[in-house]
Length: 145
Image (cartoon, rainbow, N blue to C red; front, side, top):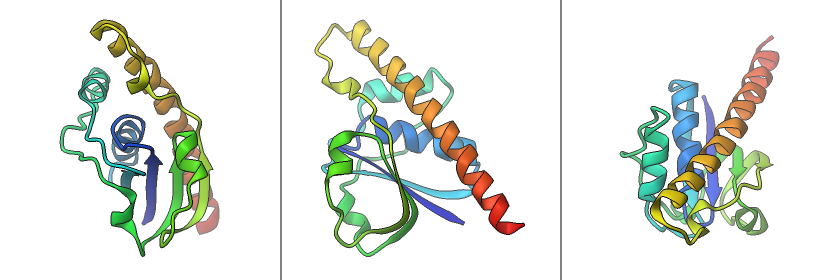
């Protein structure tokens, strides 16, 4: 079973969304985790935006990356530029894939505008995760043949 770690700055929005989509679309066919350089808690706007796309992330929680020290992953997915610039001592991986996804939590706006930004970013995350799953599954199928 493939192990995947999704990493961003605070593990509150982008990586949580990615974890939710990966879990949903792989249907337990992979071990999925997310973490942040820091742990900021799951953003309620992320929870709401994902629920609007029928993905429940209410059981997910924010974790700092150091909780995975000493572990190995098949894929490390970074979903923000800050996460890709940082070294991860003690975490090893076969392949690192970077996605430069904007931080919806950084928008200072009225609640409805903020939610709209989370929806926009959710669609970016979804697109990238679906492409990743297609690539990873294709590689797995080719390796098994």
